[in-house]
Structures are given as structure tokens and as C-alpha cells.
Image 1: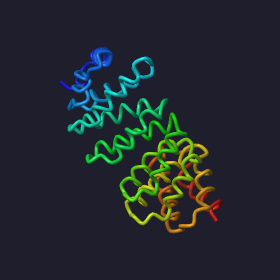
Image 2: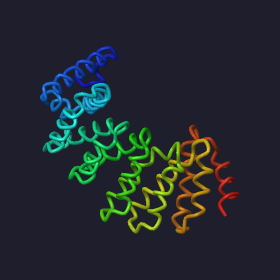
Image 3: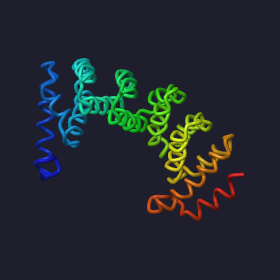
Image 4: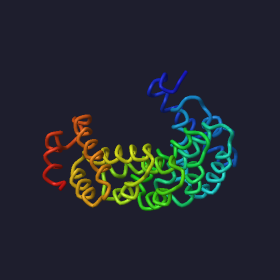
Length: 252
């Protein structure tokens, strides 16, 4: 039976049982239960496990070193689900304590399995939202990496911070405006669209795009921004027509 086949009450009980078993493992310097949860086929079991790791790390300062050591050992597992969940657990920690998990993100970026690399993107998103300064400094180091997938992943990873605070990520995005890889450029255009439809964001994005030199890419971004205002019309502050009018009046 999968996690969401259970009743709400049963799910809550299971999560607390998992939390207790993970805490017991850590106190015994073991990973018996942690490995079982981290390798579970059910995504939501793995999610409950990595959220528990974050909760324990935050509330149990004396055993933080043990937690990090357990995660470090599991990061070398042959099982990609385990490695993926380690990165997600590290992301939970990094939302308030980035330095100890920076090496986890570095290793995860270069993992052979896409699910682990995707976990880095997800972790950068949540860390960038809650703990932006070290997360964005980390991201900046990889914007010009020789591996195009690393550049794309970093670009995608900083998106969530930009949805509320586009000014924080626009200078980083600008560093990619002349990237020669279509996949990176497409991600860049996508991110520019995603950070331009909430309150005050279109104004910030357009003001910054006026400083960009790659006019062809900017035009693609403007087209995407206009399209996003229609696709997300139930969430966008402006209608598509208002967005078009604003761009025509202010992007010169």
C-alpha cells in the first residue's frame, strides 16, 4: 500500500513513526531505517524521510555532526534513490545552514543519474527561497561551467527565488545571455517568463532587460513573458493585454 492509499490519520502516524526510527538510527550512529526509507519505491515515503532529517537537524544540535556523517556515507550508495534523497535531505538543512551541505550540492551536480541532479535543482530552489545569500553565491560559481547541463541546472535552480525577488537573480541570469547552447538559452527564457508575472515583478524584469545586449534573446524572453501572462492568467497580476501594453511603453 502506497503512502497516499492510507487515510490522513494513518499517514500522520506513519510520518511520526518514521521520524522516531530515523532519530533512533542517528543516536545509534546507524542508517538501518534511514537506508530503508531513502531507498523506498514510494516518492512520498522518501520525502517524509528527508523532511524528518531536516527537522531533526534543526532541533537536535548535539547530533548534527552524526547526521552529516550518515548522509555523507549514503551519498556514495549505488542506489540512485538513496543518493537523490540524501541531496533532498541536505537541501532541507541548507534552508537554514548552508555551509555544511555545500559539498553535497557540488557532488550531486555531477552525479551520473538525472534524478540526483534534479534533486540539486529542487534543493537550490528551496534553499534560494529561504537562505538566498549563500545559495546564490554557490550558484554563481557554476554559471560558466564547461558542462552545459550544469549551467542549465543552475539557471533552473535559482528560478524560485526570482519569483518573489527577481532583482536577486537577474544579474546572474544576465551572465548567460550569450550562452551558445540552445538548451541553456531555452531554460533562461523560461526562467525569465516565470519571474515576471507576480506583483511588481514585470516592472523589475523589464527594467533589467533594457540593460541586456543580446536583443534576440531579449525578444524571445519578452514573447515568453507575454505568453506566460496568458497561460497563468489566474495567477498573474496583469492581464496579457496589460503586460503587452506595459512592455510596449517601457521597453525601448
